[in-house]
Image 1: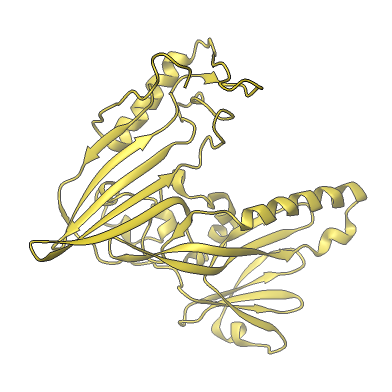
Image 2: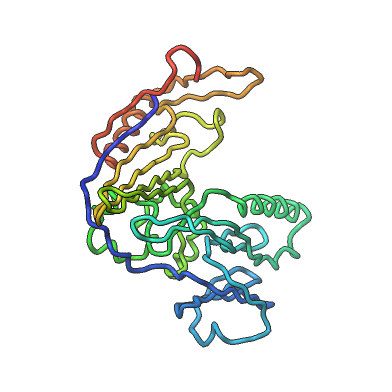
Length: 330
């Protein structure tokens, strides 16, 4: 059976904007030997070496030094990835307003680009250069990833119900320290920024969709937000990725939150869905509906138990709806 769960939270007063917000507007300065990224609104700054990709925090004086550079505006840094020849820093070059969530503005990533820090490429072998070129072609695909959302002062990975249960001290920490890692799509790209303690530049990207509608109820405004968060575990296209893994995580898991805001109060309703939490596969062939293959594995009962235990721990009591077709293979 497919896993669907529902839960409802009591009405809560809207939270103030969280401390530890990220810098909203950044300036990118491109020098021959380094990139400098600094906050336009008076925050911090850091440099990235173009030779090896090393990160270094800068003072305000260091960030403003030098004039022989190209200057442009960016809207966030999504992280850094290391390949054979060096590092590539992913920056957000344009965005669009996607509404708000719990009173905080939400933005949709419109375009991104990688800043190359790969001078070591000249020392690679011919095969390594071919491998690097292939990896860079994959980075070009990553630059065009759709459906990425972020906020500068709100952790979008946590639904209202979970956020309301955070310990008082935790909400004052940087956003990445509060986040649910299941929904942070650039999680692996942030490791070097975390090590360098560049908290104000750490943007959390969530893939999914957010839509907001407003109407009036008894002459008072009501806002309804529908926010679907796609989990970063066991991803894949239909048929190529099915079932659960040994830890009970199901393929293509999505959490959808319906948030209602009325007269300063908020109510959250959660639904989740995922593939059937068994060990199974559906090998793609030339047939219209490829046959299912249930893997006879001694771990299957434990996989199902782990899956529903995880659901109950995260979402409390749930209602499970079976969406499988009883007659056809779907």
